[in-house]
Image (tube, rainbow, N blue to C red; front, side, top):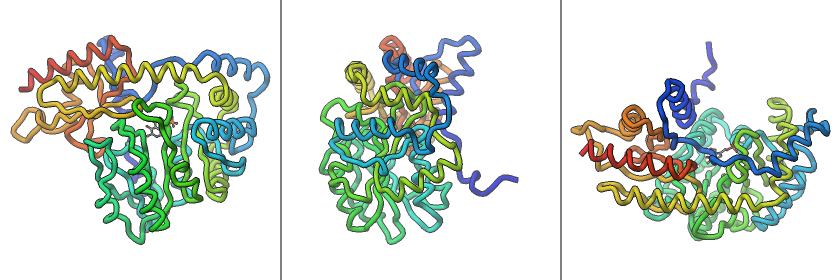
Length: 391
Ligand SMILES: Cc1ncc(COP(=O)(O)O)c(C=O)c1O
């Protein structure tokens, strides 16, 4: 009955865990949810206020398919202010979240016979975005001890005449890894030699804690084969508003706009007014949230590394840690995989996490620290208790 196309997609593991947490909570269990991929802060007040006014001022109709002129201008201003990147209106497209931007770009560039390089551990959606187009995802190893930067020999070996694109996601979900400039430059060099596209998913670009973030297109001299993807979701605590944007090659942007026009018509009109305020209005909440996330990162990394047999490298960004629990796993043990450990934490301790297996890395568990200090402390106490039980 269903198309082959839909058979190539697997359900999002992170959304599945969020649903499980909600189910458990509905039965009255006091759940600590560290599986979420969104800030626990409310959308800043200036943005909420503008959105309410937008409704009263009649911004409630279809907008141009690729987004309003005001929001595109705001994106251009933001990219220039924060990333030192210069784009024209025709090189910018607004979509219904960064996920939609990335999906559209894959749809207009990839097809059967193409190969697309994805660094592992990867965000759960990348392989599906690629597979649904008929193209093949090709996974490249990374180094957990160096911010999950690529193993360059593996990258070189995996680039073939079929390679159409390389997807970079730094800061990364699920690892939080932030690549150094030399690593990005080396990837860009290899991409240029092979004449392949580079997708730079920068949805966590405002959440880096140890060094100033430099956009991939900036390092690549803004070349015509780099597409930059950013989003209002994580930076402005606006996950539910669904606004993301792409900047890059005019022809690709135009094709993405055409696809969007025949699928979602346009991004939400009220959210576009709100996103304009988010991008060019007061940025102080962004800095405040970043500082809180940094403190939480330091806390959770220290707690995890104090647990015997656990290794947690310090991630440079996003709001995830990706510790290695493999010393607690094995065929002769009660816990055989990260799926088992994640399920044990859920069923025995009501702590919701995401198994590393979903991200291509059995042995690890992803904890989101977009949660209150109290929840983080309680969760870490329960993880510690679990590991004592499993010894
Ligand atoms: C790596 C990565 N890219 C893109 C997105 C898309 O976010 P949104 O569609 O809310 O902009 C997410 C969200 O979890 C993500 O983790």
